[in-house]
Image (cartoon, rainbow, N blue to C red; front, top):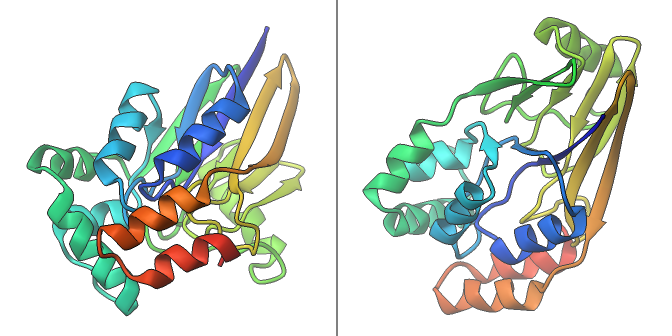
Length: 233
Protein backbone atom coordinates (compact mmCIF):
# COMPACT_ATOMS: atom_id res chain seq x y z
CA UNK A 1 0.00 0.00 0.00
CA UNK A 2 1.32 3.42 -0.97
CA UNK A 3 0.44 6.63 0.87
CA UNK A 4 0.78 10.04 -0.77
CA UNK A 5 0.83 13.15 1.42
CA UNK A 6 0.71 16.74 0.20
CA UNK A 7 2.84 19.01 2.41
CA UNK A 8 2.16 22.75 2.34
CA UNK A 9 3.13 25.93 4.15
CA UNK A 10 2.46 29.65 4.00
CA UNK A 11 -0.74 29.74 1.95
CA UNK A 12 -1.14 33.39 2.94
CA UNK A 13 -4.71 34.00 1.80
CA UNK A 14 -3.99 33.12 -1.83
CA UNK A 15 -6.72 30.68 -2.99
CA UNK A 16 -5.73 30.80 -6.70
CA UNK A 17 -2.28 29.53 -5.73
CA UNK A 18 -3.72 26.91 -3.38
CA UNK A 19 -6.11 25.65 -6.05
CA UNK A 20 -3.23 25.33 -8.52
CA UNK A 21 -1.28 23.28 -5.98
CA UNK A 22 -4.21 21.01 -5.18
CA UNK A 23 -4.89 20.43 -8.87
CA UNK A 24 -1.22 19.82 -9.64
CA UNK A 25 -0.74 17.39 -6.76
CA UNK A 26 -3.76 15.31 -7.77
CA UNK A 27 -5.24 12.66 -5.52
CA UNK A 28 -3.56 12.44 -2.12
CA UNK A 29 -4.34 10.60 1.10
CA UNK A 30 -3.64 13.50 3.43
CA UNK A 31 -2.74 17.20 3.37
CA UNK A 32 -0.54 18.78 6.02
CA UNK A 33 0.26 22.48 6.41
CA UNK A 34 3.07 24.13 8.39
CA UNK A 35 1.08 27.27 9.14
CA UNK A 36 0.36 30.83 7.97
CA UNK A 37 -2.94 30.30 6.21
CA UNK A 38 -3.77 34.03 6.21
CA UNK A 39 -2.30 37.51 5.68
CA UNK A 40 -0.48 39.37 2.87
CA UNK A 41 -2.98 38.35 0.19
CA UNK A 42 -6.62 39.42 -0.20
CA UNK A 43 -8.76 36.35 0.53
CA UNK A 44 -8.28 35.26 4.18
CA UNK A 45 -11.78 33.86 4.70
CA UNK A 46 -11.78 32.08 1.35
CA UNK A 47 -8.42 30.49 2.19
CA UNK A 48 -9.74 29.27 5.53
CA UNK A 49 -12.78 27.85 3.79
CA UNK A 50 -10.59 25.91 1.36
CA UNK A 51 -8.47 24.56 4.21
CA UNK A 52 -11.59 23.24 5.91
CA UNK A 53 -13.16 21.90 2.71
CA UNK A 54 -10.03 19.94 1.81
CA UNK A 55 -9.46 18.72 5.39
CA UNK A 56 -6.01 20.30 5.54
CA UNK A 57 -4.45 19.69 8.96
CA UNK A 58 -2.42 22.74 9.97
CA UNK A 59 -0.32 24.09 12.80
CA UNK A 60 -0.50 27.78 13.67
CA UNK A 61 1.80 30.32 12.04
CA UNK A 62 2.85 33.72 13.36
CA UNK A 63 0.54 35.50 10.90
CA UNK A 64 -2.37 33.24 11.85
CA UNK A 65 -1.81 34.15 15.50
CA UNK A 66 -1.10 37.85 15.01
CA UNK A 67 -3.91 38.50 12.52
CA UNK A 68 -6.38 36.77 14.82
CA UNK A 69 -5.18 38.86 17.76
CA UNK A 70 -4.66 42.06 15.79
CA UNK A 71 -1.11 42.39 17.12
CA UNK A 72 1.50 42.74 14.34
CA UNK A 73 4.48 43.20 16.67
CA UNK A 74 7.88 43.52 14.99
CA UNK A 75 6.50 43.50 11.45
CA UNK A 76 7.69 45.72 8.62
CA UNK A 77 5.25 48.48 7.54
CA UNK A 78 3.77 46.41 4.69
CA UNK A 79 3.16 43.45 6.98
CA UNK A 80 1.74 45.68 9.71
CA UNK A 81 -0.79 47.10 7.28
CA UNK A 82 -1.79 43.73 5.85
CA UNK A 83 -2.06 42.16 9.31
CA UNK A 84 -4.38 44.95 10.49
CA UNK A 85 -6.44 44.67 7.29
CA UNK A 86 -6.70 40.89 7.65
CA UNK A 87 -7.72 41.19 11.30
CA UNK A 88 -10.62 43.37 10.23
CA UNK A 89 -11.71 40.88 7.56
CA UNK A 90 -11.75 37.88 9.88
CA UNK A 91 -14.96 36.93 11.63
CA UNK A 92 -14.88 36.23 15.35
CA UNK A 93 -15.36 32.56 14.52
CA UNK A 94 -12.39 32.62 12.16
CA UNK A 95 -10.21 34.28 14.79
CA UNK A 96 -11.11 31.62 17.35
CA UNK A 97 -10.46 28.88 14.79
CA UNK A 98 -7.00 30.22 13.99
CA UNK A 99 -6.03 30.62 17.64
CA UNK A 100 -7.12 27.04 18.34
CA UNK A 101 -4.58 25.64 15.87
CA UNK A 102 -1.79 23.70 17.60
CA UNK A 103 1.80 24.98 17.69
CA UNK A 104 3.08 21.53 16.75
CA UNK A 105 1.71 18.36 15.26
CA UNK A 106 2.93 14.80 15.06
CA UNK A 107 1.30 12.43 12.57
CA UNK A 108 1.97 8.86 11.49
CA UNK A 109 2.11 7.97 7.82
CA UNK A 110 2.40 4.20 7.46
CA UNK A 111 5.00 3.97 10.21
CA UNK A 112 6.83 7.18 9.29
CA UNK A 113 6.47 9.89 11.92
CA UNK A 114 6.08 13.45 10.64
CA UNK A 115 6.57 16.41 13.00
CA UNK A 116 5.27 19.81 11.87
CA UNK A 117 5.77 23.30 13.22
CA UNK A 118 5.85 26.72 11.63
CA UNK A 119 9.17 27.95 13.00
CA UNK A 120 11.47 25.36 14.54
CA UNK A 121 11.43 22.76 17.32
CA UNK A 122 13.07 25.36 19.60
CA UNK A 123 10.89 28.25 18.52
CA UNK A 124 7.70 26.63 17.32
CA UNK A 125 6.06 29.68 15.75
CA UNK A 126 8.59 32.47 15.31
CA UNK A 127 12.08 31.12 14.59
CA UNK A 128 13.35 31.31 11.00
CA UNK A 129 15.27 28.27 9.74
CA UNK A 130 16.77 28.89 6.31
CA UNK A 131 18.41 26.18 4.20
CA UNK A 132 22.14 25.49 4.47
CA UNK A 133 24.58 27.14 4.56
CA UNK A 134 22.55 29.81 6.42
CA UNK A 135 21.46 27.17 8.90
CA UNK A 136 24.23 24.59 9.43
CA UNK A 137 23.31 21.01 8.58
CA UNK A 138 24.54 20.05 12.03
CA UNK A 139 21.81 22.17 13.61
CA UNK A 140 19.14 20.78 11.27
CA UNK A 141 20.17 17.28 12.31
CA UNK A 142 19.94 18.28 15.98
CA UNK A 143 16.41 19.54 15.38
CA UNK A 144 15.46 16.28 13.68
CA UNK A 145 16.83 14.21 16.53
CA UNK A 146 15.13 16.40 19.14
CA UNK A 147 11.66 15.80 17.72
CA UNK A 148 12.30 12.04 17.49
CA UNK A 149 10.60 11.80 14.11
CA UNK A 150 11.50 10.52 10.67
CA UNK A 151 10.53 13.78 8.99
CA UNK A 152 10.65 17.33 10.35
CA UNK A 153 8.53 19.88 8.46
CA UNK A 154 8.98 23.63 8.99
CA UNK A 155 7.65 26.71 7.18
CA UNK A 156 7.94 30.45 7.88
CA UNK A 157 10.84 31.33 5.53
CA UNK A 158 8.97 30.80 2.23
CA UNK A 159 12.13 29.09 0.93
CA UNK A 160 11.91 25.42 -0.03
CA UNK A 161 14.54 22.82 0.79
CA UNK A 162 15.03 19.16 1.64
CA UNK A 163 17.99 17.87 3.66
CA UNK A 164 18.50 14.15 4.23
CA UNK A 165 20.27 12.64 7.25
CA UNK A 166 20.81 9.08 8.53
CA UNK A 167 17.92 9.68 10.95
CA UNK A 168 15.51 11.05 8.33
CA UNK A 169 14.63 14.29 6.55
CA UNK A 170 14.23 17.98 7.30
CA UNK A 171 11.99 19.82 4.86
CA UNK A 172 10.47 23.20 4.17
CA UNK A 173 7.92 22.89 1.35
CA UNK A 174 8.25 26.59 0.50
CA UNK A 175 5.29 28.93 0.20
CA UNK A 176 2.05 28.33 -1.63
CA UNK A 177 0.95 31.95 -1.62
CA UNK A 178 4.08 34.11 -1.48
CA UNK A 179 7.35 32.38 -2.52
CA UNK A 180 10.57 34.18 -1.61
CA UNK A 181 13.21 32.23 -3.51
CA UNK A 182 12.92 34.33 -6.70
CA UNK A 183 10.59 31.81 -8.30
CA UNK A 184 7.01 33.14 -8.38
CA UNK A 185 5.41 29.72 -8.87
CA UNK A 186 3.55 28.19 -5.93
CA UNK A 187 5.67 25.71 -4.01
CA UNK A 188 4.78 22.44 -2.28
CA UNK A 189 6.13 19.00 -1.43
CA UNK A 190 4.96 15.42 -1.82
CA UNK A 191 5.72 12.66 0.66
CA UNK A 192 5.29 9.12 -0.67
CA UNK A 193 5.53 6.12 1.64
CA UNK A 194 5.54 2.63 0.10
CA UNK A 195 6.22 0.03 2.78
CA UNK A 196 9.75 1.00 3.91
CA UNK A 197 10.48 3.20 0.89
CA UNK A 198 10.17 6.94 1.55
CA UNK A 199 10.29 9.66 -1.09
CA UNK A 200 10.18 13.43 -0.57
CA UNK A 201 10.04 15.74 -3.58
CA UNK A 202 9.61 19.48 -4.11
CA UNK A 203 7.27 20.82 -6.79
CA UNK A 204 6.39 24.17 -8.40
CA UNK A 205 3.26 25.15 -10.26
CA UNK A 206 2.19 28.32 -12.04
CA UNK A 207 -1.00 30.10 -11.02
CA UNK A 208 -2.80 33.30 -12.05
CA UNK A 209 -0.57 35.86 -10.33
CA UNK A 210 -2.40 38.65 -12.16
CA UNK A 211 -5.65 37.75 -10.40
CA UNK A 212 -4.15 37.89 -6.92
CA UNK A 213 -2.04 40.98 -7.63
CA UNK A 214 -5.01 42.93 -9.02
CA UNK A 215 -7.17 42.03 -6.03
CA UNK A 216 -4.43 43.13 -3.60
CA UNK A 217 -4.52 46.60 -5.15
CA UNK A 218 -8.32 46.65 -5.38
CA UNK A 219 -8.80 46.07 -1.65
CA UNK A 220 -6.23 48.72 -0.70
CA UNK A 221 -3.33 46.54 0.46
CA UNK A 222 0.21 47.85 -0.24
CA UNK A 223 1.21 47.72 -3.90
CA UNK A 224 4.51 46.11 -2.91
CA UNK A 225 2.61 42.98 -1.88
CA UNK A 226 1.31 42.62 -5.42
CA UNK A 227 4.65 43.38 -7.05
CA UNK A 228 6.60 40.83 -4.99
CA UNK A 229 4.38 38.00 -6.26
CA UNK A 230 5.79 38.47 -9.76
CA UNK A 231 9.36 38.43 -8.50
CA UNK A 232 9.18 35.67 -5.91
CA UNK A 233 10.71 37.83 -3.19
